[in-house]
Length: 115
Image (cartoon, rainbow, N blue to C red):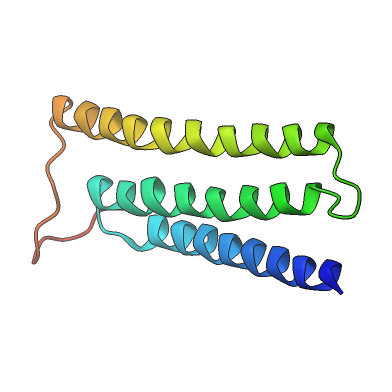
């Protein structure tokens, strides 16, 4: 019975991650300029990764026979999430700074959108 609830929770987390990744992809395609596109790219992929890896880390653990090896692998997965939570905003900030240095102007309402 416990395994069924764990599987339902894992499926829920993976579906949430999938929805966030899809929203990020759609946001990148639909936003009007460089700076606006970085917002879904930086936020939604980070949160989608959290949900996906959290679901996989929970699924990895054998809840009937807790083995140290499986728990350590799950902890390593969560450390990957911590690294992504630090690296993704830093990388997004660096990309925005590079755009500013290159002279890219933000989109303003009423301007024609370039493709």
